[in-house]
Length: 119
Length: 111
Image (tube, rainbow over all chains, first blue to last red; front, side, top):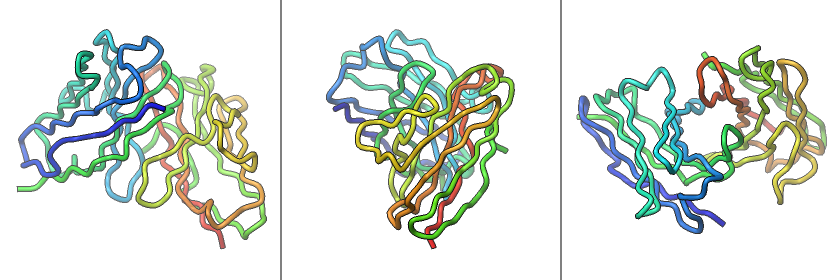
C-alpha cells in the first residue's frame, strides 16, 4: 500500500517561494504506471489541480498557475516536489500530493499540509 | 468557476437515496474522458469513491454508485447513513486545458 506524505514550511512570506516535498513510501516513484500530482484546497473551498509529473520528468501544469509553478522529481529519494513562486495570501491553502494512473483517478492521497502565506 | 458543475448542497434523511450531479462539456465528458468521485470527510484528505464512471475501489460500500452519459455524470447514494455526511467531488480530464479538472464540490447533509 503506497503512502504519501507532504512536508515543508507551514508559513511562507508574501513574494517568496513556497516549497513542498512529497515523500513516497511503499512503492517506487519510478513505476511507469503512475503520474504524481499536486492539488490544493483553499480554506473552505473546493479542490484545485496544480500539476503533475511523470518519473521521467515530464510535467503538466494548470494553465492558471503555470507561470509560477515548477514540479520536479527525485527518483533516488523516491519523492517529488512543488515550488510556487511569488506567493500571495491567495496561495494560502492545504496542499495535497497524490498518485494517479495516467489521466485517470487520483487513487492515493497524502494527508495534506496547510501552508499559510503571511508576513 | 469550476470546469465541472455540481450543486453546492444536497440533503436527505437516513435510509433515503440521494444523487449528486456533475455537468461537464465537450472537452471532458463529451471527449469520452471518465468521471471519478471523491468523498472528503471533515478535516481529512479526499478519498477515491468511484473511478472510471462506475467502479468502486475495494472497501467502498455498494450503496455508492456512479454513472455517466454524454456530458453529464451522477453519483447515487442509497440507504443514507449519518457517516455519509461529507463533501463530494467529481473529477475528470479536460483536453482543452490539458489537465485534471474538478467539480466545485457538493456538501451532503444527512438530516
